[in-house]
Image (tube, rainbow, N blue to C red):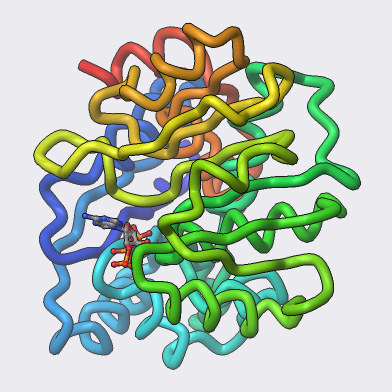
Length: 277
Ligand code: ATR
């Protein structure tokens, strides 16, 4: 029998992570000899925690809060995309060396293409709410798909300005607007994405009037608890196409799994149901 492939996710806390469920589903589905574990690593133990994984022959690991940025200092190589985003969510261990990647943008794009396979981002206008870590991955993915214009709005405007500057596109095709203008800027949107925590269980609601949003615009919420957020409900009532957030989580896991197991796994209805249970 082939040698068991070991991988996992590091974070702190880690019990809430759905990654073990997703990867172990694929390990079982494809009948692979592997194991994917949730590994609690406190911030002060990051270096020793990672060294243990190298010493024990792990093939790699996912990285979640609070290590997505700090892991970068321990990587021997970081791909261009992760470098651009400023965060690593996947590490591949090769001969004791760490290669960092970020698959969140892939997850975002493929989640949208799952609902609308023909959605073409080129020359479109995206209104993006938020300026957190997830926003960086999404903005970077949009740029990669040759988006025409990104209008960025965040409660803390400065964070949006920093993000736009880091992406190197300020005054070119990324513009930053005040949070209070979020209703008015929708007029030219082909895509509206909520990347904030607003609308999530236990968080305040996202207050936004969709009155000016063109009916052809696609609306995506990266919040997936609840799955059908108030934003998506309001969009659907007006006739806008909507994309829920769970697919981003599922699709971002696929390239990581491929790195470790050599196979790009599929997102099935069964997996969707399993993760939403
Ligand atoms: P992540 O890395 O998961 O994207 P984050 O960095 O904590 O998370 O970002 C959360 C996003 O939700 C931010 O854009 C945040 O806005 P601020 O930058 O102003 O903090 C946004 N957010 C959270 N609570 C909010 C609220 N009550 N009103 C408006 N925006 C909120």
